[in-house]
Length: 464
Image 1: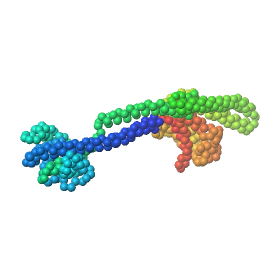
Image 2: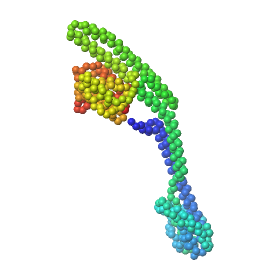
Image 3: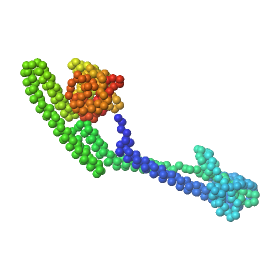
Image 4: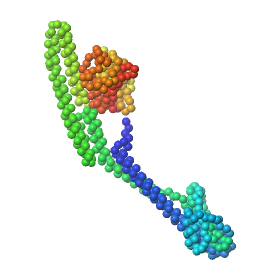
């Protein structure tokens, strides 16, 4: 199973921190872009006001016949001029960039008639290639000719200004104010660098919290898998250290309690062997055949109960080392041995299914499942396969199944549902309890279910 980093505490803390920084930067950038755009617009409008006013003042000083030539020759940056007898702006609105520019120029000329209007246009940006050319004759010698080069399509504000020079002479200027500009690359790079630095810092800080919790979770998983002497490292913040200390104390008490229970059951089952053997010897001396057989049957049942109780006490507490084995191979080998003993169970496990486990314990659990299928249904099929990230060994039979309300009770020690499956079957009712204990000791589970339309299924599921 693939681990999603955003499902971990560290991943989510880093994600929340980085998102918070990104949102704060986005808000700051929005405010910055708005203020920057307003400042640029004000600067552009002031520049247009100063340049148009300056040009109008100079043209007033020129003879009337030279004004059109000089105005046409001026190629100021983003400005075009011409002189006509009538204004290009008849009625100008009072608001917007045009109104502000008209009022600004009018302040430079007392009682001057200034009109301006603005509109938003889309067109190629103009990169002005400056070529120096001084005008001859009268007029300012710093006026230069500027030729434009077209660039990419952008949105801009176009302003048309008409300034009355004298009766029958109007200076018309067409100006293009710059549109919104992207944030400087340096600012964006600094923001990206700060987000990365904050993310790394958040990862380091959250790791100090997430790692002890991950260690605690691993220790809890190991304890649930039946491992002994499990302890979680005591580290991290104070709250996490208290949780780890409490877990270690609980694991120690639970280990002692389970150990005492196993030792008691083991000792009791072991000590029962001596009186059972003595009873068997005395039963062999009984002369009456019928009585002797009844006694021997009872003794055999007691021996079987004792052996299964010992197996239940040892389930999950084996000292056998874990190793990676092929469950399909175990299933094939086990079914072959059971068939030699007359147990009708066949294997359908051709593909390898690798899992880390204690092979002897898994074989014991599968033997119990196979013997149950043979006992209650006359036989079964053992299949090994992989389902998602888990390894599954399933034993199916064609028997009568189990009442639905009794499925949850099947793994309880000494519980038997023989009346539903086979009244002739005998046993102590510990086979499924042992199989479940072994599965849980491997951090797995035992799944029992009725099949449709008939039969029973027992699945031993282990981590893959």
